[in-house]
Length: 629
Ligand SMILES: O=C(O)CSc1cccnc1C(=O)O
Ligand SMILES: [Mn+2]
Image 1 (spheres, protein in one colour):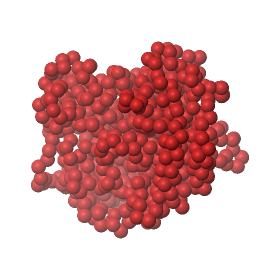
Image 2: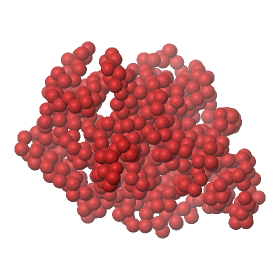
Image 3: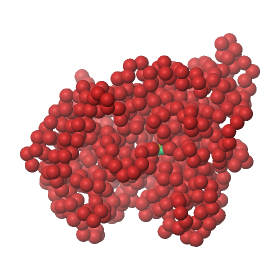
Image 4: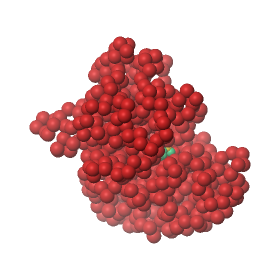
């Protein structure tokens, strides 16, 4: 179908690949309009095939942006401009007509830590000063992708326009890119993702590592009501792979609120006990707090089996039967490389032995990847390397081999313990939700909350020691409510209300089985500053206790003011070096009295009048229980 407006807009823009006029008309209009705005030298409609990826890879290798890691099959490495290495929260915005659609009514003079609001008129100005002509001399790739299996009832479709072929390669690993998306689209809406590295040709600045970007002019703006994302100036991770944080969390949480489901920053895992009974659990930990490690856990206790459904994002919806179901909307893993090893996550290691892309890690002269944590696994510890800055480096030299936020991008299908149902369109049944974070002091190894509302309150008070994924540095305990702080798509108080509302069974439906909510803390330190708990594969012992609780075993729990903690002997410690049980599970009165004051101050100053009454009630009741200790 040819439409005059589209034809006029496209003008003589060459279509370098694909048949533009076979695209659905609404997509033709979207592509033509953006092409007229950003004026690329041509349009390339992606088909997501291996052949297409190989062609793009060859071009990037020739240009020097990507190089093959010759020790593996089809693995590649790239180094970014050192100024473009992580999500940039300070330049990530939600654009809504009314400020409080995005941010809560914080106390006078208190900056919201959730949601970063930009008024629509300012967004217009920012857009006009960046996007017109920004793709000059570059190709505009049209990437049709599905978050979730194509055509699934919980899946959603996006179209990303980008001038970065690195982004095209990564989107193909992280999402489902296929012409089948055009057919699945039908009359449903889709999320419009517009991305540019922000460096039109002819380029007048020095491009570092063949990595075009425009760090000083970065903006990542979301228009949730319009289901639109605009990203400029960064080629990296969550700033540019718009299917992940921007779509699957910030925009999707808005769609989920409107449609009655949940878009959460959670891993999804299947756990089978020695009796062969499998349960599925989701867990929300802040960035770089071990979600991937838990999702791919290798149990140290015989008879247990863990299989991975997802490691970062869960979309969940109550089914007709009242059961909560979850899908992993992603198609790959974009995991933190440093700290990943055969000791900490052998299954992750096995997931990226081929067909994967490594960003800002080190490369040995033998063509292997290297990062902090692999010292004991490298064949030759004296081997010469190129570090993430492109400098000659050896183990023991000053500086780091890999950037702390360096990443592997690997197909989920390559994970040896990927669950057989990981692509089930309807998802897997969820029986427990676990919140957790890095809490060096005062927080027990695990506790079960008293109710759905108490669980939401506990999630809203989630805190964790900061890590490398965001731009914060240094060790401090930061609030990260529901592990969604950087990804909150709308007013946090309304988000809590949405969780509360979802537990209510709609008229004439099967009663909703709300999952039990737990909190875990693998990171408690003893008085000498040493970890009290071995963690990693031994965390199955905590999951075992949780599953016995789900199976109705209520004998091994001690009621405390913050929830039920395991009684001594109720966690299988066989084979473990002695553990100081009291230090590990104690709920110290003075610590929690302080904490009660701090979370009240946090909720009152950060959520204010938007805090649902039910959660305020949980806050009051918990403070009373602690006070009565
Ligand atoms: O986008 C980045 O710079 C890394 S952040 C990231 C990547 C994958 C999964 N989770 C995160 C996160 O920050 O939570
Ligand atoms: Mn994450």
